[in-house]
Image 1 (cartoon, chains in turn purple, red, orange, blue):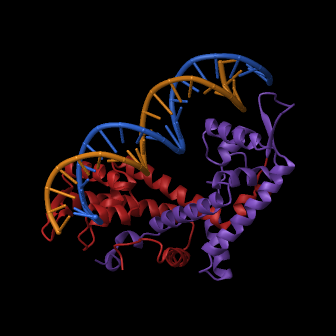
Image 2 (tube, each protein chain N blue to C red):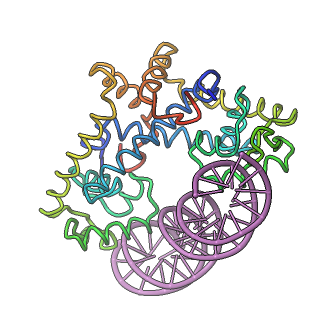
Image 3 (cartoon, protein in one colour):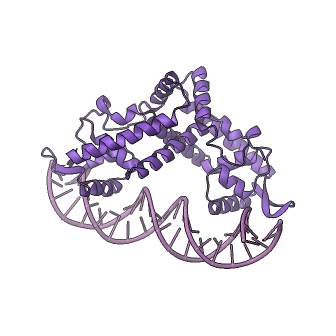
Length: 151
Length: 151
DNA sequence: TATTGTTATACTCTATAACTATA
DNA sequence: TATAGTTATAGAGTATAACAATA
């Protein structure tokens, strides 16, 4: 039986975007797991690698994670010696989350996996097309993500 | 605090695609819920609106849903009088899932919601750009979704 | 009084395994 | 023996509510 002839869902750009998003997520998850990590860990390590000093609440907002989920995530990374909780002297309720040296190493490794996975996934697009796609997605996300903390 | 300056994740096309996918999903879910429906129901109704005669297994594969989840989904739609289970005479283990008249009405309503949501979401792109995006996503998905049943 | 982080608990969703009927 | 559909159950993941420390 051939759906291809009239698969109405495939005519909707929104559905395609939704499905493509799921697919990169799955492929990334597979690649990160194979490397002993996870998509989430990559997101956290990458977020903490920037200059901004992030608290758990900040992470929660930037990555759309429940605060209680962030606790468990940082617990793990702290146990693995990749992240340090440091009290924020300006507001002792908050932490400043910092990558340790081991965390920076872990991040470098996981960034390589990310790059390889992306290159494989977008290989069907020519370099110029990929830039075009990036720009369009950037515009679609502008003001909607990352929310808060930014600006 | 401004992340925008060095938010490394936003430089990855894969992450942008992932996030954009989540965003359309959320906006669609909101819109469908407001209309008394759901993204899933839309997907099912739209899939069954094609010419192919789909079984629950077919649906399960096309929409990446667990077979047990499909049972519950079709139960609901059958109770709502929108879908009929009809034994496949060629293989009495299978059903042929059919939209009823009420199902077609429900689909028409939900397709309008989908169209409106898409137009709002992609409003930032010019018509030509949106076609370009559609074509690129189509190429990225080719052979990866919809899997099975098709071809 | 409000907020950050934490814990314990409840809930939702999905997957697993076992069963019936058909092939 | 294998597959479609069904059911009951277990598990993963997430959200909710209550608490301690700080503002």
